[in-house]
Length: 219
Image (cartoon, rainbow, N blue to C red; front, side, top):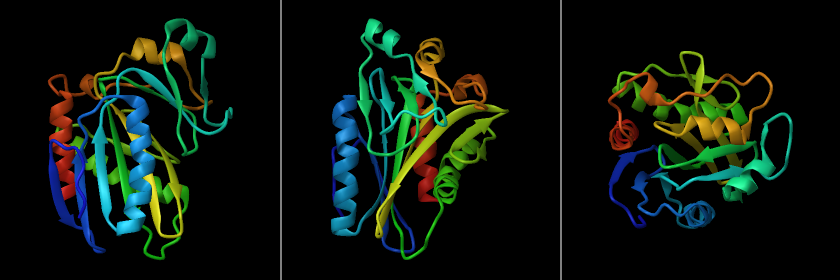
């Protein structure tokens, strides 16, 4: 086992050891993204599976390369508004973070199985979908890397993998500023409009989703 700054921890049998759930307190997006890289290396070294939850202050997080396939962002507007843009090591497009968005990450052992990106995303999405179900919200996985509620996107995902471990991380819009998100982010063609989870269950707060998420992973 290893421990980090947390406000909640719970273990479950994962078939290859113990899956530790960690909820990080810090909301600095640069430090939180750096922590993803640290944990990925640490998970491999100590052979420990982990799921992590955290929240950032407002920023944009982009993939390694600009591509119309994944969408992008309004660079001039981000500069004018002073919105920090951070590059992650996984692929995909640009996602918006603020304090109404819950970020989640799975660090999982590959165990010799070869999974396609879509399979990795679908596997991780099951826990998010189960958590939302605990709160009365019916969600569906939408290939290749979305979770939708009533035809609207509430979560996007990205991934990276080594022969031993994989990282799948994503966002979950709970009560984000969709006005700013929609002005800053340029979605790829065919992407449905985004929505907050609170639109489908008005009394839900971020801590409610954290509790449901921890329960779903421990189930």
